[in-house]
Length: 284
Image (cartoon, rainbow, N blue to C red):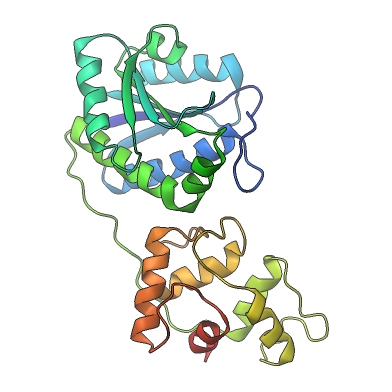
């Protein structure tokens, strides 16, 4: 069984970013690594993950020591960059074997306009690991447009590209992720509860499970659509369960496409936006 060690960014200070909602480099790299870890395990890889509670030098030292003791086949690192660039980059040790592995990841990195492979020996995790280390700088977190893209479907695309590459490198058969089976209609009460969690209110009746003027008003405001980013995450999860995609609360390309299919199947305008007409069709 392939043994892959995963290490997300663990800076002593969570570097600020230009993400659409408050988010640091450590934070979104761990969200991305959650996806990579979940998929690798589903595909049969043996995975260890660096302790997220440790940061700075102690985190790197403990992770490298753990990976070396474990005898990992591959050590994978995920960071995001700064400095005004507009590309993705994989760093590795300047050996023929490491470069060949980095080139595999380069081949799969299709969702970014530009991707580079560079060698480094001054980064601790690259230099101190007993196994090959691939060190990703996924995108530049000081670029507002790229941050928005990452949090609107880009994270999923990058994670899946990485999983494909790691499977090839470790001799694991890759399979596309299986979409969840679409669920039936949610209840009005569940919809109300999700809306309340997302900051909407039903001041007179609360989540009473009954559709009235308060629900009509909220339904006109509580849209789920592409490029809403972190807004309406609980309502987005509810929609994702209905249309049959992973309920991660982020309305990216896959969710938008699934919404359009569902709307077409239900004789609605297939614009990819869950507004009042779509809510009513979904709830009744």
